[in-house]
Length: 141
Image (cartoon, rainbow, N blue to C red; front, side, top):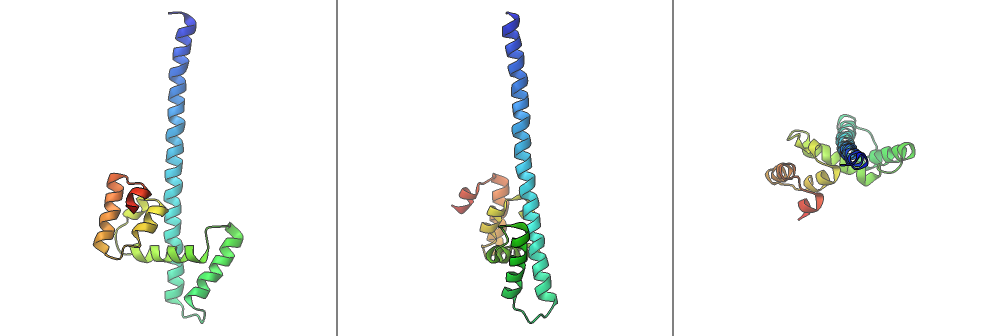
């Protein structure tokens, strides 16, 4: 075997190793960002709920959420619309006393699962989605 062929083979092996490392890291980054976003949305829902439950402001729940939405959207951009903040509050209310497995799933998964009213069914789909690594499309079906 010539030195050039051997060099190409060795280079190829190291290139594949680096390629695999990059792809693995990219996957982990996405997973970690997703985890942090879901945790953030749970905490935002908790904070909004705490304000509404603990203080008897004259403003209605909708006005309070609208005010948060306007300020957060100005400062942080999209993602903090009134409907999204309401979903975050519902997300918190759905899981505040139950399973914490929700933090293993994406926000898209959680938005589907939290709309299941029956707690036993909700827990089944939560656990099955994690165990079977279902995509959002698979969960929708």
